Length: 259
Image (cartoon, rainbow, N blue to C red; front, side):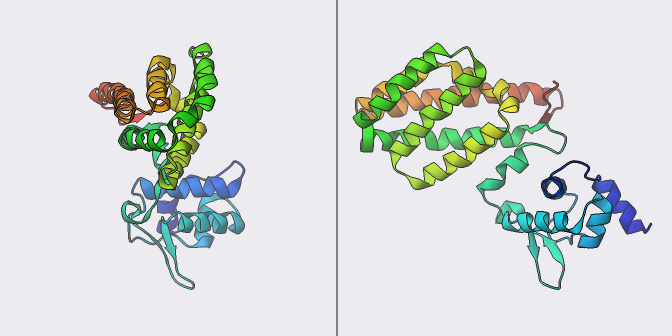
């Protein structure tokens, strides 16, 4: 075995589970995000990746195509495959790959960033929904709030109802950019809900806060709707920041479900 092959094996563990292309994508994505393959570096060729990861060439090619679509790498026909600086090239749809580490833990800084983004855009999303559709949202919000009250102590159900509430609001805002951001964040929340629930459970169960937001929206009171929303998202951000500070005080930057 060549020295280069030995180095590659140290960085990339063999893939053993199906689907292979997904596993290869996750391995390479993790290696790029962690800095094992820094911006400007050249990825090993397809043959070497197949040997290192113990997979077929089809799985490697599919994974590389996904990495290029996500703007992690640049593939030149007949040339080298270079790693891009994802801080400059990537889009919001890669957040799930940044949030969860290869070991299955949550990167606390990425989790905090997601909450901060939602906290920043949600009050304006509510403002637009109130202005554009206020009273028209009442038929959808009223029965949903009843369900939220009935299931507030069932974490999985409370989480699903929380997403339904905000989906009604974001659709009511009639802002396609907000809808697309919301869709991306909802996909992440759904994919990793078992990991995220311990951080966000208190926000799902705060039905009184949702009721205050809904009441202001359907009454057409923009200022009250924004204030109620700001209180809600600020409490979430503060609760998460407190948990993160506690973990970081113990030297933790990645939270594991086992902790």
